[in-house]
Length: 176
Image (cartoon, rainbow, N blue to C red; front, side, top):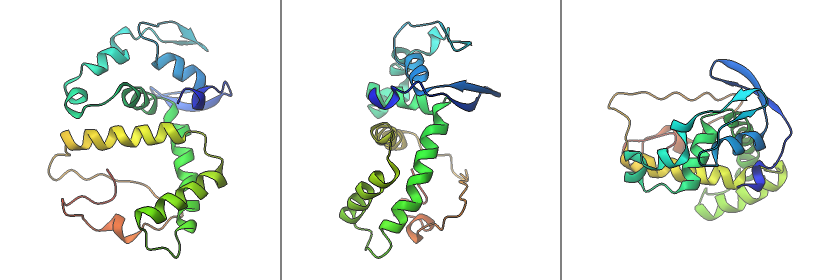
């Protein structure tokens, strides 16, 4: 995961209602070290109350059994890195869909298709995204959406698979 964030190549993303320039390396440095506070690229990161150790003590984190890497990635995803992770996931979906075109969508088919898709898009944040999914799945088990809450997702140029549209045995559909 650390290697995936070693780039100092900057990108621009919205964060706290401001358009900011940062890099994966800057974001990783900001989130990971315990007790670290300082200024990176003009951003003030004196956020002692929001260190990973504090998040590890949160009731839901303990209940879900989240590991430190899952908490680190969740913090990264709720900051400017959401842009990089979403770009990768969005570029992955169309390639994955084409790789699965004539398959039965078995777990084995999906794993093979995912490996081919990762190669085609030159995936940069594979481990990070897998850790994020792991953390979200664990949190889902201890914290469900309130009854009647609708969650919307935007799709552009994609057609959702029928399994995405119809509820599973727990009444969930469309994701975690």
